[in-house]
Length: 382
Image 1 (cartoon, one colour):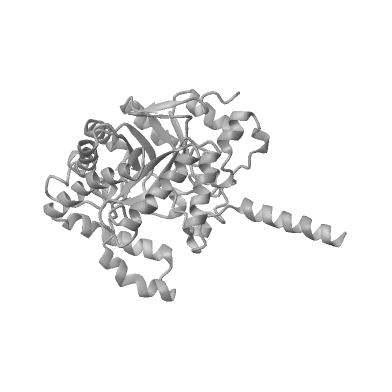
Image 2 (tube, rainbow, N blue to C red; image 1 turned 180 degrees about the vertical axis):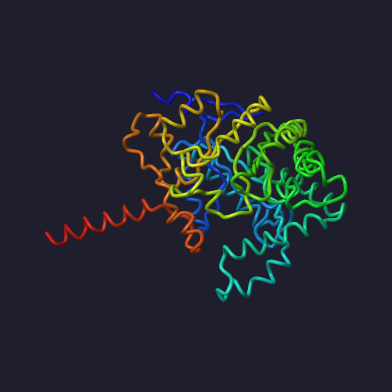
């Protein structure tokens, strides 16, 4: 086929992916059966690995690996992914929002006085005090949690561990949020310590597991993202993370700003182009020989093939494109690219669906349903 690099196998650490395409971690907001069906379809469509986002590092009021119910749910997820031919990665996630603060805002959220976007801002405003005030004892508990959660994730069938380098790791990394005066704050080296200890805890607990690190980059001029690592701090962070035991980097824009920055629509004033975050990969690529996974409006097979073939990135992660067409990989492998349904970046039913609490769908599903009912009406009329 024309898309040789996309469809060639690639090894990271101890696992070999059957091709170069990964489903990026995505909050789907769907009911269990529909969620599993969607994951199954994406795996069947040829994607090499699916990353399951936001797997809690500690026991949590939400489903976590620590409760029997949560553990079994994650096991169902990995079984669904494996049965359909893909690998599964668990993204270990430690929130940097205080649960007590969230509870305070819940009544406003329920009555609609506080919109979800406003809640994000309110919670983001609490991050700095929380990170700066964490005790050493609590930090040690959280770090140990990364190791424990990784062991449970492996037992639940996950093949790869991804450390969520945004959220708490990203807030410790960020000079905007981290105002600590101890060994976890101040210099970039100190601000890298928490993330490195999280990686090292997983590496100690599972010496052979493949560890991917979601590297959250924030940029100035123009300013996007508040947590995460400044471009010019990457030369300090990347080697330290590598020494801590990372096998690959999943490079993207830091969070804690508008959701439409990290999930940019085609109309975004700055990140509107295909491969909109790949310039961060270029910087990471200069600093390490480890594989780099790019993400950010990757849709067209020609563009993706070119980035992979040139060695600019080794892996390509997609979310919206695979929601729009789960068979993207199969179609590139079989040469039926003309049948691809390309994500238009409208964000209407994916991000929009998420924000309206309807779950992530694609505008394509609506178009197809509409077309079906139209042709049905025509039949009835004739």
